Image 1 (cartoon, helix red, strand yellow):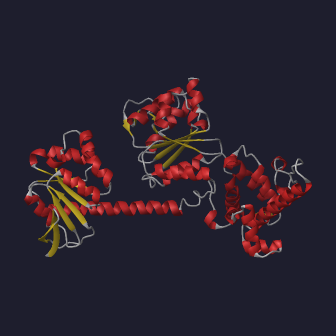
Image 2 (image 1 turned 180 degrees about the horizontal axis):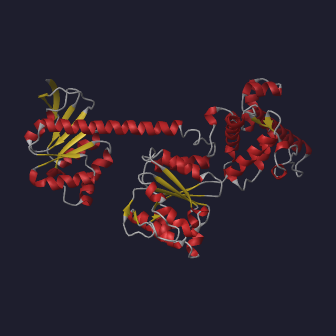
Image 3 (image 1 turned 180 degrees about the vertical axis):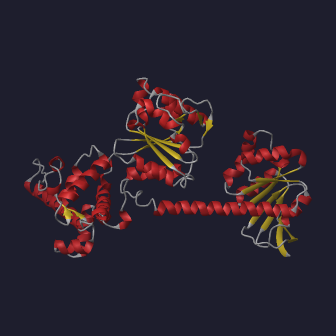
Length: 499
């Protein structure tokens, strides 16, 4: 037997308890039932401090002051009812104070239904009077193990984001950083996500990223390219069909929703689906049920839906081509994916990632982008976004005969979009001395940026190439507001990109 210090309204009391491994520090008991208080006290070791109160107000006051691992509270003091909504309101102050604290409701036999309602409303478990110390120990240990496992799972999910998803989630763009923050926030929820943006921005990759970092990450991810499926077959593809449902239906076929049960379904180009399919999709989102084509059986399904579109659905709704109620169901958590022209800071990351992928496939040994080629990449408008950049990189890689991608390996339309390499813009309204000074600074800044690009932001080699010391280079970079981090496109810590 061990000894525990129990505080009853601030007065220390000694109590003997059963020997068990303890991991928590503070326990709070709120009850006027002395036998119940004593039974709970017996279950915690000397590593714990137990506090006892006899009314809800004092309990809530202490609870807001300090985090308790466990709260044992009488259902009568809690004021629970037979309504889950009202029980949620009663528990709300405790959840707001410390949402990770474990709440166990203690109840006489005649109020068991109220205790069950509190559990449905968010309490962790309940105990019936008379309180059995062994049962208290079992419930507490079970909740503790569950909490520990949940913490480990959360940590592992965090590590998955940091490792498996880290390269994809790298960006230098403030706009894209906000996108990844939204993805990280919504990933672990069950909310339906709508990704919208231009073609080729990587919406499919972001959908996989959400799935991979969700609670369904170990389940199936089923992508459906709605725009590539003929209208006559779309409903069958999504919801399946029964044998004989239509000409050619020689056997039962499971739909994508049924296959994606407990996982995630990704509906790309959602704006292309037909009005009948919109009605059936709305029902799935509302009721989580559907019928196979030609079938009468109602099938329940647990699927997280992620949709994507490159069409302005608002205009489609005004034209009567898309249901507004379906749109609101799909856009519970909308995320706008910016085009490449709005995140040009990431182009060096994209090109380096593509180079590494191409080298892994072909082992040609091209590891750099020529400064003039990079300037063309940075100046181009990229109407096809990341997909176009990937295709041009592959084309240049195939044609290139040197160790870096040069302008000669790129198409003329890309090069023609770049600003003239040697052109210096001058303001003829200024005196010659001022124009000369500004021109010198512009050339100096452009020279440093191109040299840093060529040497991937490495200060020592860039300084050597420029014929100056690293200290002088640092001073010049500070003068022109240049950061070396913006040019380290070859370092593993800055890779990232959609597949």
